[in-house]
Image 1 (spheres, rainbow, N blue to C red):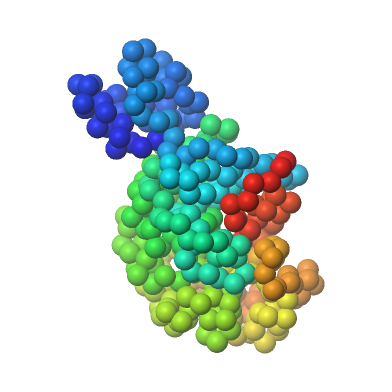
Image 2 (cartoon, rainbow, N blue to C red):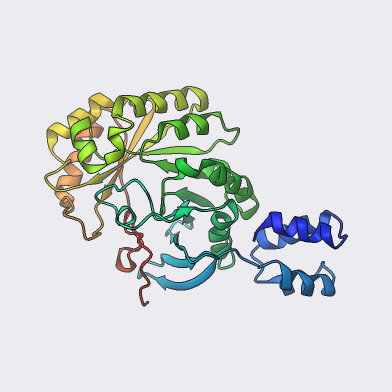
Length: 329
């Protein structure tokens, strides 16, 4: 819901400001529509239904994976495609993967979103409406900005959406923003008053390979990105997650694991190894044995490392697969 439009509409018809707070409270609890908001007068509900769309997004398609992951494909008012994902875990966690842009301008070679044409930044309300859609399905407790787009290039709207997430049950400490290494955004996030986690998509331990995989490295090379991460840590005192997608014969060798150990301060960084999910690119994923051997080298040298549990691969909802394709399911 566009809460700015709601505020201006209520003001134009002489309604008190607390009506907006009432409407938002209903939204945050998962209300399905204006008719559910029983502490608003019936005539007001009818008028708002005519003048304020309940969501800034239109659901075009939704698919559910065998593991319970749900992917939603939305369209904005100007027809831009946006995808978001609800991930369900056996321990009870309900985590969202939200998008900050329609498409992405940064063209990482392993990522399906990077192969799309870039549309535009999403508004704060378009970001928040992704979360509200899933809140209408069930309660939520975690959120990652690892969907379509580079969040640091749209940080004002991302942070504006983040301020509302605790009302949905997602605390700032359970929210993470992922970046390919957009240094100005990392520095701005460090100055935020919200204790949001930082995740860095690294994917290579040296500049030449990283630039081949992620062209943004030519603009913000490794030493600049890691220096920004150090500044973030000094300000926030929160561990930074390193995302490292495992590409067979590209970045998964023993000596590259040792390079990563030398590159990252074990007191500040934790590595999350990501099995590669098919995106139609030229890469193949590392074998399970190679991923485990890589993880073992990191752990032997004191660098915390885990292997990400893949969710939603069968509906193209896994990490790197979001490309605004409607699937049956």
